[in-house]
Length: 224
Image (cartoon, rainbow, N blue to C red; front, side, top):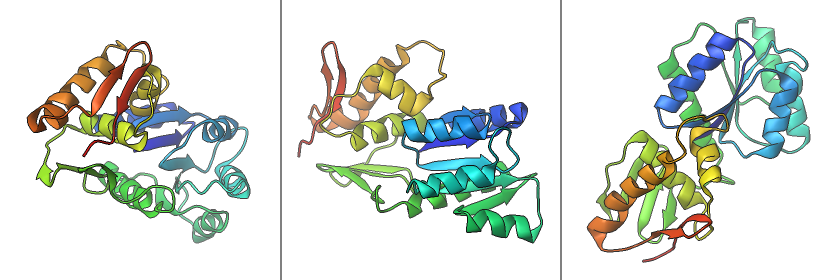
């Protein structure tokens, strides 16, 4: 999944980013409501984790503006408040679910997976390219009906390529979509993971679906 975390508490934001990335998700973090709206305008997210008490523009207003622009990305509100009226107001302005602080990270992950599955109008439950199938809900991958075991990060790279089937994806697009815009590590990590995917998705089946487009990036072709 690609997740936007909107949280002004630096330690919590860092913990969420680290935890979600360890699960193989791509994460961007916005420290205030105005920056959150900019991120949402510039990128497509599977789900948004949105704190209520934010500087510049509060979470209620952020959610309201997203819905007014017909941005239906699932929103999970994150708040320290537990009064019923706060929850009702959040849901009334367009939030899909909420979690109160303190919370269990495992529960948060489960809620995020559930919300991502609801966005079926834009993202099918199971992504298929030829005989390759990827299920974001179960994190399962099959090739010709045969199970393919992937790590969390390999799964995220493959999902990004499959959602952009037959299109050339640049290294920077993969870094932003899988590792996040603020990734400051070695960019050669992309080649490493593409190589791993080829050894698991292509080579055992005698096909070459993941190709390198010289000087441009990578493309996953629709090959039966």
